[in-house]
Length: 260
Image (cartoon, rainbow, N blue to C red; front, side, top):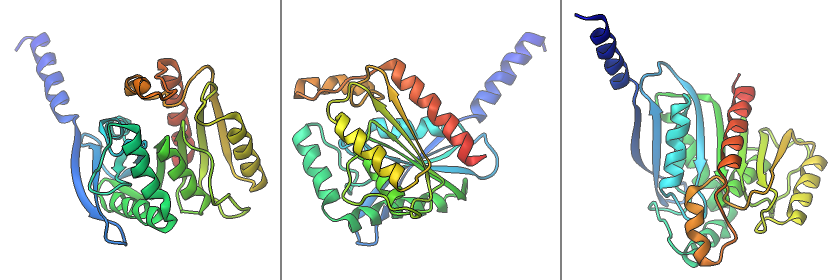
């Protein structure tokens, strides 16, 4: 066999082996809500690996959240995009999305139970190291993961991307176990400077180990290429490729620090 042909066949064989596997997994929270998770991992990687929860924007468990799970799988993590609305609901219009989000946040215990159910599902996957779990969230999902950290959920770290920073349950000294990364756009009008200042004051007062990164000139939803479609709905959002790539690099460095 010619050397070049042999190399091509070897490359094709390796490519066929290195594949991101995905699976839709039904599960339910303690209150009986039926949920649908989207799980992703790289089957070419042997053994257990850190697990990462992905919490969707207020649009629901859409293609963007699922893509981020695949992105994490490609980095070598066991990733689960969770469902905070139930039945995998998604919205196309802001009014519908707002209704879904408000319903999910109406009772904090319900939101906690849905997130916790996702964590248990991720830990149960054979590829996951249950001792190494983190969470990331976008917009609404950013608030969710920050609130889970505030409540002392045993996560190694949480990362919020253009997340909602306000909360009804401020962090208290000695409670937060997770390290925190916040990626925020300097031109975000949905999460105004007053909210940023209040968040930093809250974290400092509670002596939380956190890092706040401001992406220059970035608007709300700066990581999502789909954001520009929603400008017609009157939302002050926009994709920023530079901020997206920089914040993703920050996340990888953050995970390297917490997972070891």
